[in-house]
Each structure stands twice: as structure tokens, then as C-alpha cells.
Amino acid sequence: MRWLAAALIVLAAGCGSAPALKGGDSVAKSRLTDAEARAAALAKTGDYAGAARHYGEALRIATSLENADAIAANAINLSIVQQWLGRDAEARAALAAVLDDPRTPFSERRKLQAELRRAILDLSSGNTGAAAVWAGQAERRCNQGCEYAATILNVRAQVELESGHAAEAARLAQAAAERSRGNAARAETANALRTLGRARHAQGEALAALEPLRQALEIDRELGDPRKILADLSALARAADAAGDLAAARDYKERGLAVSRAMNDGRGAAEMEVLLRR
Amino acid sequence: MNIALPPGRFSGLLLKVNAFLAIALLMVAAFMGLVAYKQGWFVRQTMIHFVTPNALGINKGMPVKLHGFTVGSVSEMQLASGGVDVRLSLAAEYLMRIPQDSHARHAREAGVIGASVIDIVPGKDERALAEGAQISFEPARGISEIIDDFRRQAIPAFNEVKQAMTQVGRSGQDITEILASLRVEVEHLPATHRAVRKLVEEAAQTTAELGRQTGATLQAVERVAGTMERAIPALSEKLASGIESIDAAATQLKKTGEEAQLTLKSARPLLDHSETAAREAGDVLTAAKRIWPLSDSFKESSDGMLPIDSFEAQGKGRTR
Image 1 (tube, each protein chain N blue to C red):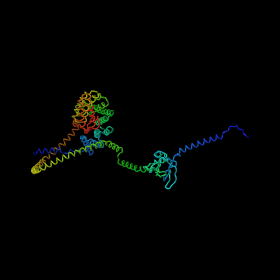
Image 2: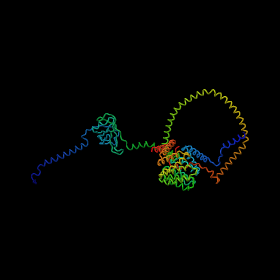
Image 3: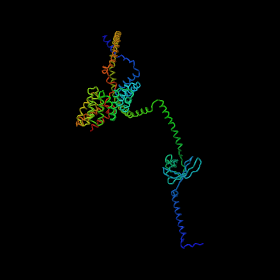
Image 4: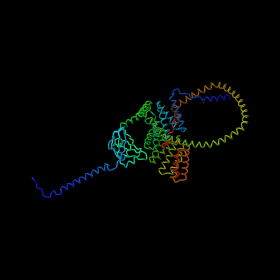
């Protein structure tokens, strides 16, 4: 009994002991780490405004420390959160800390991330020309072998689809799907399948579009992102309509409407209601 | 020397001369009549007047206007006690359109630089002005007076602007930054407005719901109070026995604590050893993370980065 108690106390002491402070860490460095941790926690809980505030603070501290990697990481994270808040101009301005600074020696990986983010931002605001340029730059830096190869291909596929080149979009989306298969980032597989389905639909192959869209929906449901589930259901409803399967189309529309209402997404719900009235 | 004129050459000359003179006289009379008509000599005129302390800019013959329509002119000006008595000659038919509490003012037809006129500003009285009545007069402000007035009003404003700019300069903040921040805040106003509206609506709903629930809660509280009233005697008995049990358990706990203290004393060296070992293991792990073959295995996949997702290219914002 005594030995058991002793073992428990040892275990508790091991778990409860404070981590050893790194001797070289300054106050500013610990504030930087703290701001980054707080921002990440707030972003995880959905408080994007709070996350943006802390990423901004972290970016400021990183700039004062001339820590190139932290500057880039926080600028990119800040741009992501600002876009989630619908502030595209601020998101673009955050990326300028990396893209418009030739003096700071950012790593190739960070430059690529910033270029890719810029392409995504430009495409989301309908600037397909600029998006194509930034995506091309990121692809050259990636050289077909980086962790963001599938994401870049997906962005390029969406650019082509938005530009009316459905066949090229389908080819790029197919390539993105193949590259992302077996990868940990399954979200990009789903994105690739969704874009492939949309591209096939745009080519007039509604029946062929259904299968990749269903696969995308399956993955997105596993990943648990309602925005993507809604996008899949919307694309599926359109493809099923075009394929003449009216019952399936109605089912997808009703499911999409339920999802958008649960998300409090007024725009998505309105879109689904329009689709249902057709 | 007599010149013989042919007989009959000037016969009727006197008659012709008289006829010519009569026609000329008639034409002069017609011309004068026309001029008199144009000058309004045939229109019955009536007189009103006002006294002004300063008649600068007022001239004889200056038009008098009512609603912008010429109804007469300045007919006479003469020095009087308290200033200059200015007499206005108006067509009698317009006098009935000028109320008793009307006043005259010196105005210009096109702002500051137009022709000077006397403008009659009609009052609200229902009774018309009587013939020969005196009305009040509002002298015109000169351009220097207007400039002085503007200067008096503008100087405090300029001083405040100057003071504000000095404060901004002292605060060390760039005005463009302030304006940019202001613009960002203004852009957020519609969203804030929507959020406040939603909050108010939700608050109203919640209040109504709360009202309903309060009634039900009060009833439930009444029921609970009744139950407690019944249960308290039995509970107090159980509480007494429970306290006795706790007392016994506390005694036992004290004993266990003493034993644990002894155990801790014996385990202290072991604890020190284990802490040292843990620290060393941590150092080894950190070092191993830096070594090339192992560094990839220990690399954190997230890297503290939020996901760069190509889906974000599809639309604006993110639903919470």
C-alpha cells in the first residue's frame, strides 16, 4: 500500500512539475509565443476577431525581434483570419509584410505560403488574372515537389474554371486529386474532387460529375466542415438536375437548405431556396 | 430791284406751312404721350416712405420690387430727423398687395454684385398698407461687413483646427493612420448595426420567454419548498449520523497523512533522481530533434500555421 502511494506521488510530481525555463528566452520572445498560442486557441474556438488581434500583436513583436520566420508565419495566419472575417483588404495588407519586403530573408517555404495565400485571396475576390499569376509563382517555387502542390493545383483549377476553361480545370483538378491521395491533407482531396465535379458539369457531363462530388461530400462529412458540405450539396443538386434525376436533386437541395439554415448562412439558404423553386 | 415771280407759284403756301406745322405738332404730342405712358404718368401713383439712418447706395429712381416684380421707384429723398426720409412711388393698384407689417430692404438683384433695388418683404398681416404709410427699413450689409462677420465666425474655428493639428502632431501618430483606422471602424458600422439589431431582437424574445419560465419556476419552487419542509426532519437525523461518520473518516485520514509523510520522506531521494532523469531525457529528446535523420520524424505537422485551404478561394468570409 505504501509503495503504491509512493508511486502515485512520484507520478503526480512528474506531471505537475513546471517546465524548465529556457535560459536564453527574453521577455519579448515569451510574449511572442504567448500571443501566438492565444491567437491559435481563439481561432480554434471561432473567435476570429480575437485571433486577428493576437496575430497582429504577434506580428508586431516578431517584427521588433527581426524574426523572419515568425513575421511570415504570423502575417500569413493574420491574412487567413482576416479573410474569414470577410476583410479581404486587410488580409491582402497582412501578406504585404512578406510579399513586399525584399530585404528580410524569408525561407522559400514561407514565400510560397504567402504567394499561395495571395492567389487564394485574389481568386476569392474575382481577380482571376492576378490569382493565376500568384499561383504560377507559387508553383515555380514549389517545383512540383512541395507539401502545397495539391493546393496550388486546386487553385489553378479553380482559376481555369472561373475563366471558362472547364476542360483544363478538370485536368488540373484530376492532377490535384491524384497528388493529394494518401496525403494527410484530405481536405485538398475533397476540394479537388469538388472542382473536378464542377468542371465536368460545366463541360456538359452532368452524370460524370456526380461521382467525384459524392466522394467530396463523403470526405467533407468526415472532416466536419459545414461550408464544404453545403458547397458539395449545392454542386450535387445542380449536377443531378442537369442529369435529369429530379428526385435526387430535390433531396440534395433540401439537405443543403437544412445545412445552411443550421449554419445561419442566409446567403446559402437563399441560394438553396432558389434552386428548390426551379 | 424787283424780281418778277411767275403767278400762281406760291399760291396756298400759308396753308401748306400751317398743315406741316400742325402735323409736326401732332407727332411731338404723340411722342410725348408715348413717353409719358411709358413713364407711367397715366398710372395713378401712391406714396409710402421709410426713414433710414444711412442712405448710402439708395438713389432716386431706384426700382422698388415686390416678389421680384417692379411695382414702383424711389421718388424722393430728403434729410429728416434720424436720417434720410426716402419716399417710394408705387402704382396704386399694387398697394393693396403689401401687408401692413411689411418692411423694405436694400438688396441686389444677383447676390453681391447685381443692380441695387429696394425690395419690399411682405408681412403676414391681412390688412393692406395705407397710402403714405411709413414702413421699416433694413439696410444692406456691405461686402466689408460680410467679410468681417465671416472672419469673426471663422477665426475660432481655425484656431480649434490649428489646436487639433498641433495635438495630433504631438501625439506622434500619423494622420493617415488615424484616417485609415477611422475608415475601418466606419466600414464595420453596418455589421455592428446588424449585430445590435439582432441582439435587441434576441433580448426581446428572451425577455418574453423568461416571463413565461418565471411562472413555471415559481410553481416548481413552491413544490420544492413543500417537499423540503417534509424532508428536513429526516434529513437532519441523517446529517447527524453523517457528521459522526465524517469525524471517524477524518481521524483515519489524519493517520493516513502521517503515514504518507513518512513515505514521502523515504521517497524524496527517488523523486530527486526521477526529476533529474526526466530533465536529462528532455535534453536528449531536444537534441535528437535537431539531428538530421530524426528531425523529420519530430517535425510538427501544424508548424503553428492555420490551414492554407484552396476552398477559401471560392467565397467571402466564414460562417461561425
